[in-house]
Image 1 (cartoon, rainbow, N blue to C red):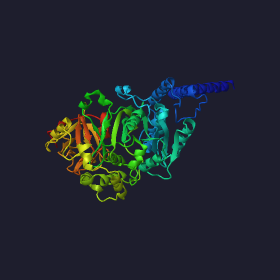
Image 2 (spheres, rainbow, N blue to C red; image 1 turned 90 degrees about the vertical axis):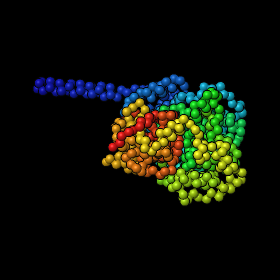
Image 3 (cartoon, rainbow, N blue to C red; image 1 turned 45 degrees about the vertical axis):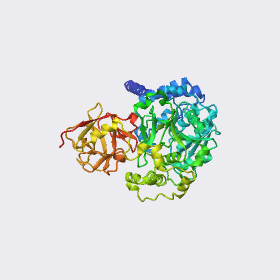
Image 4 (cartoon, rainbow, N blue to C red; image 1 turned 120 degrees about the vertical axis):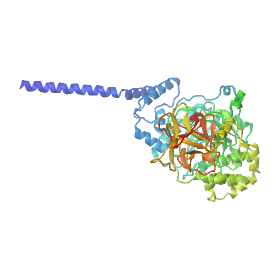
Length: 584
């Protein structure tokens, strides 16, 4: 009997020992998570005595001080070092919003960003009688954390006397009701309802008409339109308002810094101006280095032929006088080019102001859509209203748009007469001569491009700079097909999918096919050559490979099999062309 009791006692003791060991082991595994929880509680305790430890979405407080910034950075360093981001959640966030919404939630409603202004901006002075602005932010299925962080950046970095109101226009979001509930709950607890106002359209209007809806509800002297996934920088509004005070017919844009869609890192953009191609696709035009020989050029407002469209300020009376946006446009796309042409041709002026900077999440795709080419339709509509005898240049670039229904443009034609607008030839000669046929600016990069294209028999390996990786057209069973991706693979002599012909039209044709070209429209990808330039016309910008139709350069990570993407040239990859003398 005693022997049995001893066995039972020993078994219980061993079991308890194993339980203790497992608890200790699991505790060690979970230590990083516990560390983050402790940091959150420290952070919130400093600003919210009644911190609710079930709050998971917003880990940073509504109160801003240096002590909190230190803790928030510590939280982020701990959190991002875990490398255990649930893959399913990450995939869902990209599918919904086309950027890393999971990480955005972890960053929370406030953060510090680098002041990217040139140091000379610190010496700039502005009028003491600046008007108050209505800041209009239209959103549709936007991530709540990104929108909340954006509004907080405005409230934190803008003098309150210059903010008449912030109008959040919900264009009938239908993706995730929880996101809208989170925005409204945060607004109720943290924002002054007399300053931050929530508006709703009765039906989904699309971006163009949602902006008109916001403008109609605005009461400020100046309208400032911003996209819903931005963060404003230090003293961003004063330089814009100052230019409008100087001339009420001047429309102004900030320099748009980049917020990386994957890492949400805030990246400085160079000073440049807006342009366009004959397809009416917006692009960025970069200045030659000599432009900045005089330091003042870093702070002087830049005359810009077009604007990107999502971020600009305009006098409200002038906006109404111009006729607001073209109401015949659908959803999104080309409205920025249309209103740019209208501003210039009808007596106004369009500028980019270098001392105003706003960061923008540049997503690789629109996370929503109705399956129609609203951009193509809107571009064709714009061309028929404004291009006059140069309409054939547009259709040469976009032959697929001939004959499509662009709606009634009679009202816009009448508006053009009423405003006594100048002809498009005047715009070409005085505002954007670079677009004139056969009148492109002479640049060292263009000469180098022409030299490399000079003979169609020239073949090149295109090598990712300082690597042994080559631009490679992906094949299926050894054959190239339309829609194929482009990647980087180890360079191989004679591999026809790595050898490119650079034609006089600017096309980059893989030697594995006689009819396919590198096209920037969807990726880039390999598509059928159409001999029209545009998305298939490539040129050099230093060591970067540039496409004017999208205003971006091709980019690859320095990793085997990385897929090529379009990126703004300031952060894109460099390449080198190596003549190939041998093909299979």
